[in-house]
Length: 254
Image 1: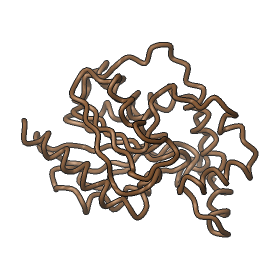
Image 2 (image 1 turned 45 degrees about the vertical axis):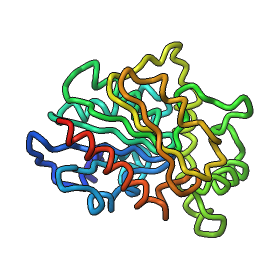
Image 3 (image 1 turned 45 degrees about the horizontal axis):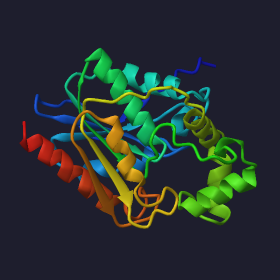
């Protein structure tokens, strides 16, 4: 049997070869998910944007690889791959992916290997915003599943239960990374931030997106889109339209 070869963390859904004005949109999904939620995004953005999905260990084609339970390990795992991608990069993070994208932006700004032009978050808690109750990654399986169903991230039924059983370990690892991130000063990034919230998000609540203002030295804006907390399902086209519009505005100002 041949030894297992680790798969790349980055999955290109658009052209990997961009001109000097091209932009890579690097996308990190919610807890437990991989790159699959972004496979159709390249059909909804201009051709100068190349969509890149992030596939962390322990999911999709990387099921056999050890999970990462530290936010710092996760961010450095992704940033190390992006340092080989010259040019302009925008980062998008949904829910858990928002704090991950923020930390990646910090690391890339430190190394200056590529230019971070924008951070976009959606349904994302700011770093350190851990509810003062039992930690999600420590919940019993039934309670964890119920919380995901309530957030709209998983369907309630046999199919949803089957998906949960397959992804539970990765979901717990991601929640553990977020809930145990104890940096005393998260600092700021130079890149501007767009924070997006579903207009019916009862998980984070009204005004949660405004908390991201403290994490950028650049321009901060917020947008509301139709939907609840989980925006990578049926509401995805509306979400992508807002992101593409923002990136087009950024592009026009070059």
